[in-house]
Length: 233
Length: 233
Image 1 (cartoon, rainbow over the protein chains, first blue to last red):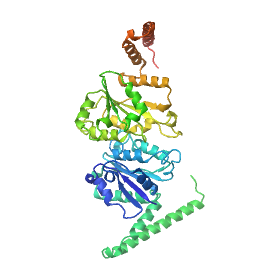
Image 2: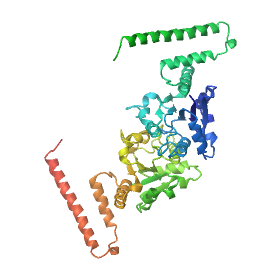
Image 3: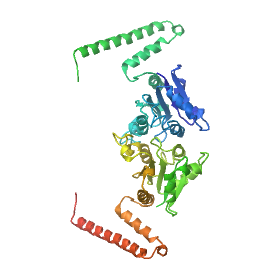
Image 4: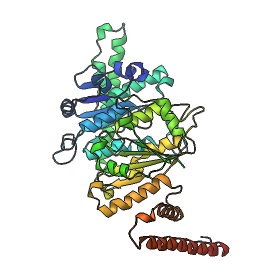
């Protein structure tokens, strides 16, 4: 699965959250990072090239700070220019059909304000309706958005947890199943060069891997038992 | 009441609907027409001047073609630049408080597609959530949007009816009450120079005015009767 991250931020070098996300990008050819404002500083978009980029990826992520409940103007410009009739919709316009559309939103206010009675008053599910409608029109699968609230108030450990979830959001098919996360963790552990670790650590890593695998076997056994018992809701 | 129409369209000279609306603008100092792309062709916005413009008006209208369920990028740029903290929201940021916010949206698809099961799948009430949230944050009153569906398929008589409703949307307080519309029609009739009319027409106009006034008196009498009868639901 190939993932394209379309990032829009007018002053990305000054954004702590965007820099943090960028530095944590997995080092793999499966993930393409594409910052619009630096690719097209004059705003003139190469439509054909952008459309090819979209066609070469399976999961399309729009990543931006939520300003006035929507994207920065450059991403809107990109949408208006690139998602043309006969490409993204309309007659013959099925080039995005079956791909996934994800949102990574960096949000300044706390999560609890985005509900009735909260200071923002509307949920993110309601505020992102235009993107859901876009996914419908282009026949893409709309993924659960990845929401980062108040990055600057997050503790270091929260940021690291967020980062792992972010990498999974970029790379894992069915990213919100436990099974997919297990597989991903095992793959990550396998990529560690054990020679660089302090004495004793390789042994701990082996133990962790075995634990995850044992856990999965037990879960599978329970599932099998439930299936045989014909358990239904 | 002073009304500011903030228009955003990247190629306004080629837009039949925008030209039609522009030509029908009432000739009064109460309505200011402000096209962003031609005011700021290089995109550099004079923030202070725009904020003053907002403060000098009571009803703020955002008028644009709905592209990908949102505004053209220039209007988004304007919102991000002009509606600053301490002006539009936050500490001391109550400069828009109590004003009205209206939307005039030109929409390419038919109205019936904007519902569950329709080809667009989402209502305009849902798609405009970001603007409703903006009105809430800036303490403005969100008006019922003025929606123009498939302008190019409208018959001449439909366009003229739409135009009258548009002028009322711009100029009348409580624009969707019958009483306000009556008053507006009477005012419009009064501005007609009778000397320019063909013979007989001035008499017809007088009759129309009397009819509207008689109608209103009768409605008021019925209302008074209902009030005295203590009619309650």
